[in-house]
Image (cartoon, rainbow, N blue to C red; front, side, top):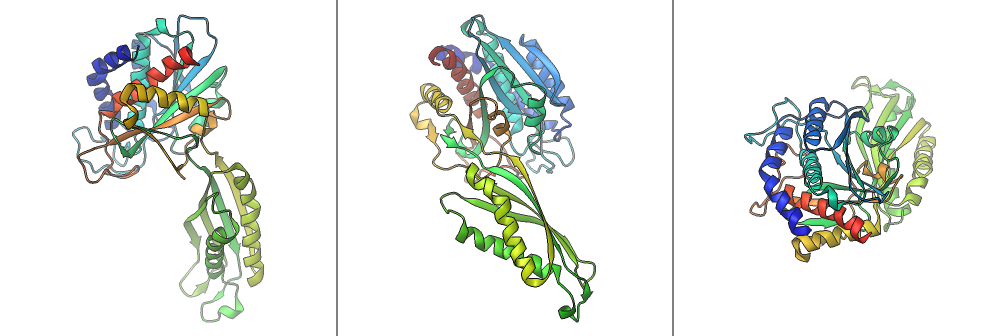
Length: 393
């Protein structure tokens, strides 16, 4: 069966490269994936899948019914949205949309999802159950998965698989990770409220800018001394708003940031921990404060059985030397984790790095590019994992 899957994928390779380049040339931002969704729907329909559009606002479902009586439903999720980045690759098929680019590889994800559907549609007689392909919008703003779940895409799903490109792994190889793959990502807003005054007489005011600086410094120092170093926490303030004029003491400063963590217990304690530190600093200098902590997406926690299934399928397909077991998680975030609140799943890293390049630009870079041979690696890995899910699961 592996040889059949590889042969089908190889025959599809030219078409899949065309698909990827079309999607890459026509990027759409989160929640605006109308053309991409229509294109995806057309490809799925032509492959004989039952298609539902407008799921999760601009998402698409393609469902493939096997010929057996196994009631288990396996889902495969890929995302479709691009980033607000001006592309600088100068590729022949570079983005035609000003200020938009597939700099995170979602064009590859979508193509791999379509390729897997095209391969499996030609061997439906070998599938005892159903496969549901989820083409998700708005991953980059961490909302698309929730939109899809709200529209019922995880109803009756037994397990779910996903992938994400990884430029630091060469094309032709993949990376699997047992347990935590990505971090939980939460949003933080801190407002420091002081009292305005003349810049020449700071002792008559309560300087919100200076106190905000103390808050930032104290939070960073406290992480290294009050948080378990084996359970990492990253707190980054990315935006500061405050002040009226160079010679006026600021009476209000807003700090906006992100908080990343891997362990649920640590994450649960972070809001109170942050507020205590902010309160202590502000009280020391006579300021008031507000702390608004909003939980975002949780950590992706890969299921052991499904990860083992992915690893064994990839090793059979490509050899064990081309399958890496990743020793560390990423502190990046992925809303694939939202699906894992409804069914076990696993996401793997698809290597897309060029082997002959000294530098493979990272995700979200305007010069980011992929070795397109990775598309077949992703298709075969997913399609064969689906086959093994029913014949070994």
